[in-house]
Image (cartoon, rainbow, N blue to C red; front, side, top):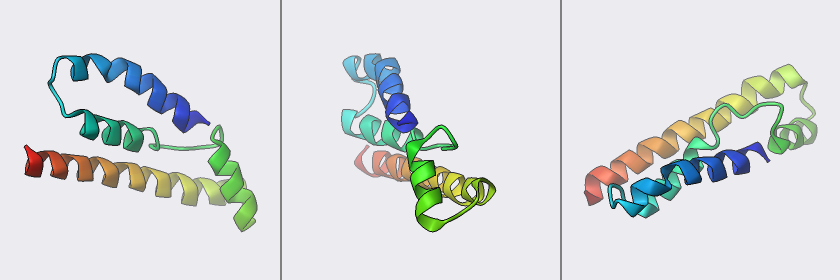
Length: 88
């Protein structure tokens, strides 16, 4: 889905940072995965699965799924930053 495309695109963009040794590759993978979930919407397969499974309207799904996925993304980034601060 769109999250996979986002993660693969971001991976190609940030790959030079790993080659330069500027960041820990493990944290970069986690941050890229978390960032790929931001603002998920109607072009995401998971959006439609969630909508149909819970019997929601498109508007209700936008208010729940998109907010939930963005929250997961932000908390994932916070976790990466915390791990980076602790592992240094």
